[in-house]
Length: 443
Image (cartoon, rainbow, N blue to C red; front, side, top):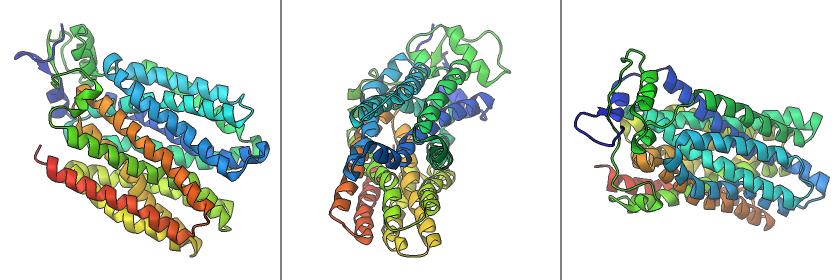
């Protein structure tokens, strides 16, 4: 019988913290990173598909904003409504279910013939994908030793950024030859293929198995996969992270977490508003200033390449120097780099590409980092709920960001003024994280 705490219990977190990372843990990271990759691919692909959809269906530019935001709204509902189910039914089960649902819904989107159908299907697809991501973050965090948690959470979120980059490359090669629906075929078949590997290779959360009193031998078989030198016969009792109540949303406001939860929600909203506004509208803004399709694709991709590079710097910094201090510095640097995007549009293409890389380092890197911060902030029994609700509330910013930029463009706001205004959320986010660190660094 598996229980939460006994004096003679096998301490699962202590075991993971005390040993080097093995092949099974790297496999978990790889599978969770691929889940993130599909999120990034799907999110950015619509930005490249939108001009072709607009031309084929005779849509105005203003209609593109709701199309961009429909999947983000679905993600929000998935994070808020389905992420708590991961703590109740298991991270692996929810990842598997949502990956299959995401693939099937994308397949059905091929049949869409008008804006309403497209928006509904994008919304439902977003819900399915929103169920998987908090579970992937929680599962990665649980199987990593405490000293490397931020590093590997940022590592799996590199998959998200790689999905953005891949969307640009695939769109440039597939859409001219096979039309915009070819991107949907890719977006449907890849998650259905991934689901097979998730079913075969991804282990269930040990914390979930212990809390739900799974058979001791079932828990021990997973522990043995982490260390083949362990004996065949395992203990009867296991210990995991303790939490007084079950993984309800109310737990996010217990044990002194109220201030941290509210501030994290606001920081998520600010960062995601910045991120999705830039990713959704940058191709349109650059094309409107006369840049060639190659420069547009390169500059847009550089914002996510910057986020990938950031993961290799910010993750170790958060583990070694502290998560709050490191993330605050990233946001403060982002104020300058986002503001420089405006003047860079009037400069040489290489200046624009460099500015996009630096802005992406802070915006995309900041997004990965604040997710790692949330994964560290919440204990295992409520980690998926905590990360999911932070992402869900943050999606209000993700939905509003592209819509706000669309309104500003409708008023013909200049590029300099547009990016100066876009730098302000980064300043507020950096200040909030610094203040949060001052309140919680002792614990």
